[in-house]
Length: 210
Image (cartoon, rainbow, N blue to C red):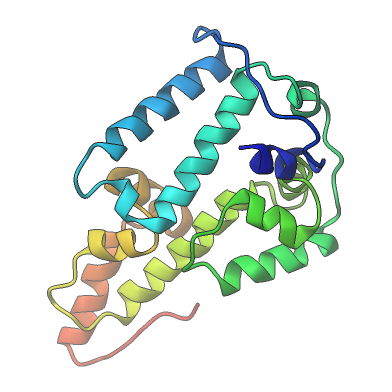
């Protein structure tokens, strides 16, 4: 947690990290922390849950730790986390963009991206929003959805299940994945697969350009 907090604000850990014993669940941050911790607890106790999927587990751990640092007052980082963030131009983000594209199939955390960028998670997050209109993790999700689409378009297996391909790239909520996919490509993943299957059945072997 201390290492994650240091990456988040871009400062070295000097003192042990300590929290107040209570937080207010009526606030937006408090409600987010409670919901994320509850979800993690359920998944930890569910056979075949998210703990068996490294891509999703890394993201969930980072999400819960971020919510804890924001919602629960602590002795080291509260003021830094709630203060304004410095932003960086797009050119300085290129190493992070390249890293995401090259490693999209691996577990990637905000802390790892901040080390690639050599800036705090907070600054990286603000810079991505300023330059690309989304967070680094949202950009990663879009890259992974692109890989799912590529897999659907290249598919020659009539038994392929969309959920299996989506799970491979870290998506475990079918309805949310389908909604995001449709937002990006104007069609549901099932429609992409059906169209690809029809082309293959007709012997056209046609795929779409990237």
